[in-house]
Image 1 (cartoon, one colour):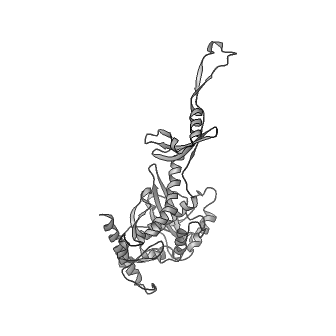
Image 2: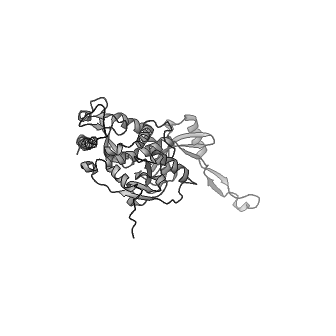
Image 3: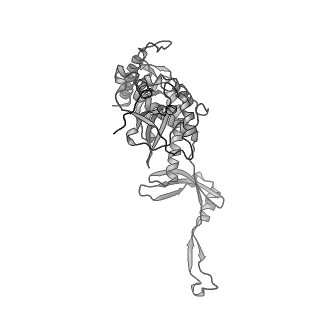
Length: 351
């Protein structure tokens, strides 16, 4: 299936799902439309002709997570949101993960770097190959000529007398080779806050891709979208993740049902570089309380120390199914939310 066929398939799937959502008596769009597609980021409406790349702002395939981190095309976003978020968010997430790999000297990691000795700095790269061998490469074409020459001269191996001539005259001419020390700094450019918001965007799109347009009918998500569109503003609390290693069975979409102050959608996913796979767990507000106040609870109670303290909670995993293909599941996210956060709900713990 080529990219155009993928776009048509995704468009028709979400467009039909949107028609089912619009059948709800309390859902109204002004002006109304049919057979449309809502960009989940900017909320603008698009139609099938907007799949053509020749239009000013066409619909584009959206890799979730980003393709550079192991994702695949799951949904569509408009080109404006796709390219803007890629430049403002995804690149920062990628760079911080790649730099972390380099700092840990992991196999298959690579980063731009600078090397300095005695105040002489040169630019180059540092990588670890698949066998764990470190390779440092100096690039004179992007280094200052004088500093490059001085750096090379300083790094030449020198010999020193190893033994004191006062007490070891028989070893007067014994020598050892000493290599000068140098410092190395990684040169990847990233903004940590933007990388965090990129994680929020990944979680939001995973939930949308699996639960459809009904998931978007959630007032708590308005602030999430606003934060994604305005990464330099502090619209949400600084903390919207839960730092905990969850079992593989919880990867995907979950609902935390207890404690009630922590009720939220919990999206657990992995990001993959050439060196490793890292799990992340991002909280998204539900359609009723505590809504976005869940982030205040996370920051106050789950960020003690390094944030890895154990905490008691109950969560229900939402199985991966073709919810978008069935009218009865147009509001699947709300059905699950009402079931698992109801005051009388009793979790089925294994005996």
